[in-house]
Image (cartoon, rainbow, N blue to C red):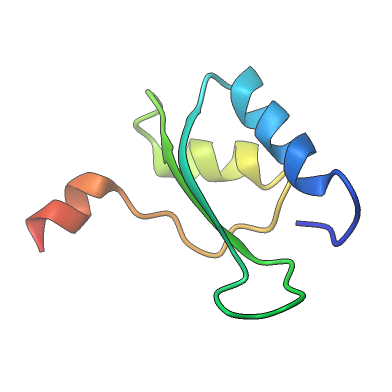
Length: 73
């Protein structure tokens, strides 16, 4: 995400256009000025690569994890 005013708002608007529900947003992890955030989202898209490609038009994606995978661990 770009380090500029309105970057998070712009990303959230884009997610809404993709019909993606935002469950939680965590900014910075104890870092005072960070341009890293963690989003927990819900989507009907089943293909993680399709989701990644759509999201990478607006932000750098580090990792996508399915909640199904997390529950199986």
